[in-house]
Every structure is written in C-alpha cells, then in structure tokens.
Amino acid sequence: MPDLNFLKSILDYNPDTGEFTWKVSTARCIKVGQVAGYLWVNTKRPENKYCKITINQKRYLLHRLAYFYMTGIDPAEKEVDHINGNTLDNRFENLRLASSSDNNKNQKKPKNNTSGFKGVSWHKQHKKWNAQIKVNYKRIHLGYYNSKFYAALVYARAAKKYFGEWRRLNSQ
Image 1 (cartoon, rainbow, N blue to C red):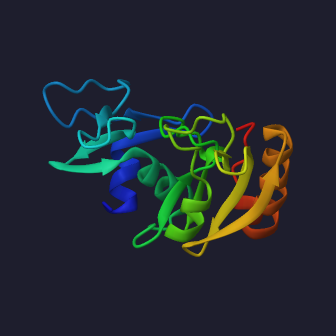
Image 2 (cartoon, rainbow, N blue to C red):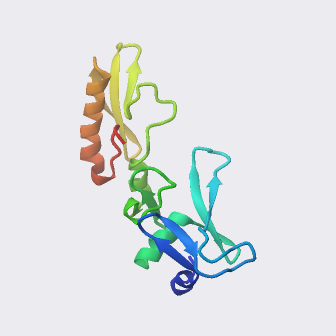
C-alpha cells in the first residue's frame, strides 16, 4: 500500500459511490476531478473483474485502497470482501476485511450450476434433488429431496449454521 497521507493527498474517495477522484494531476493524461481507475479483467477467468488504480507506476486493487483509505488499516495478508458479491461495487458499506476462508464462504453459485440454487444438484440415481455444502474442504451431504426449492432451503439453513454472516444465500 502507498503511504496513507500520500494517498489522501492525491485522491478523494466517496464512500457512498465507491469512486476515487484525482485531487492532483500526477500525469499528463490525468485531470483534477477525473474519476480514477480502470477496469481489469482476469484473462484466465474473465468473470473476475475488478477496478484498479495506478499510483507511481504501481497497480492497486481499488477495493483494497478504499478499505485502507477509510480505516487506515492495511489489508496486507487479508482479503477485502465485496459483501454483495459484485466486485465492481466498491462502496465502503459493501467492503469488509476477510480471511481467505471467510471470503470463500461468500462465493456465488458456480456458472455450471443447473438447478439454479447454490448447493443443490440433481442426483440421477436417486431421481431426487441433492443438497450439500462444503465446510473446511469437506462435503457434507444434507439429504435428497423431491423439491429443489426444499433442498435450497435445507442448504440455506446449513449455510447459516456453518458460515454465519459470511453465507451467500440463493437469493443473492
């Protein structure tokens, strides 16, 4: 992280919008008042999109800078989690410090999910909906159900039990 005083001397952060704006022109292409940052897309995983800001020829993830700007705490080895799962929503109320384990609990349902619900899949052999959850790298079988909606409810209860505030429910 850059020095906090230096960061605050060159950038303004609006916690309600999640945007940084330049206070000073640090390069010819930067104008005072201009929104800072650019969209970065992971080429190996194009669904992973983040905003980055370049300061003194070093790139920083915008959400990590925002957390640091507001709290004065360098996230260092921790992760800064987007509570609602939208990695482009950098409002301060949407950011929280997280361990890698906690951040994994907040993952969205996989792209290849066919049931429409996190933790729910069709079991061909039993001809029922299977509910399961992964806790500490171990799968926990939650049962087979005739209704995928009931299986989703069972998953939601388990997510609340095992993940608490870090859970991401199917409605999110």
